Image 1 (cartoon, one colour):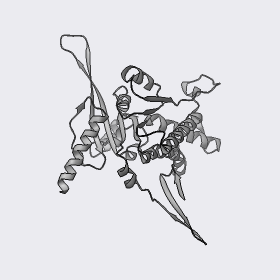
Image 2 (cartoon, helix red, strand yellow; image 1 turned 45 degrees about the vertical axis):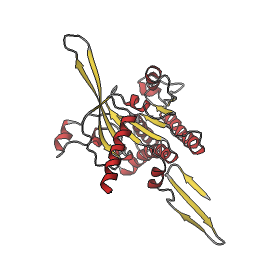
Image 3 (tube, helix red, strand yellow; image 1 turned 90 degrees about the horizontal axis):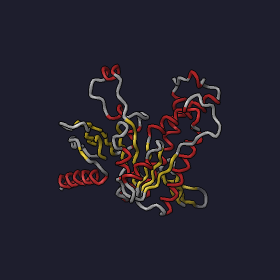
Image 4 (cartoon, one colour; image 1 turned 180 degrees about the vertical axis):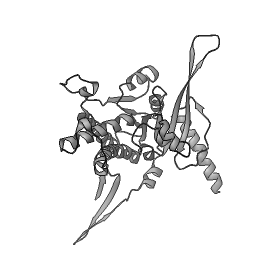
Length: 301
């Protein structure tokens, strides 16, 4: 009997004999299912309006965008009207709230539950073959991490461990609760790779504080620039940083926008693609990956 656990990303085979059951772990390990399907898991990060959602919409159809920002529908409508894109808006709003601040209106626990339900739904559809190929996007992981922190602190407050008004977590067990919420969502998302679905995550860029930069002996890495949980970058095999460059046109009052990209990490390749790429999309990324594959293949002959 085959037993699958999408949260842990493992498959077991249980074989019964007259006296005992033998459980074999990791029958379908990462290498096997990544070789079976030519899919990509990509994290794109950058400041607002740098083209993160646009890049996600250039990925293979059908595309499902789990949208935390409420802007994906506009990108779909005006820039990709003919593509098969489903936008699932995740934010849950309380039916009753005291409008002291915007956060009072957001049902954080309900939103986390909705995200979990959507990831489970997509895993079931992919496993059954209802979703074939295509792409699932989390837009954005920055919001997911913020909500996971709030929910974790709220759970701790209800248990009497912290005061939400003066909340400052210092103990590893407390942070493990928050990390666990975020981890389960990302692992559930990554499990779609097993069924031949591309996985795209977006995250917003965060400037590194001067005091932190001064203490760093080397140039800050992309892990330090992503405004999300510190481990986000390690969950993706390919990472792309996006830029938005404004250029004033000579003798005119108009400003020209250039959307630029840098590949920071490309699967297991020793990336040399340091040049800034203009007009970046999923197809260009695949072509660059194929170039590296050919180089490796030629070097092994």
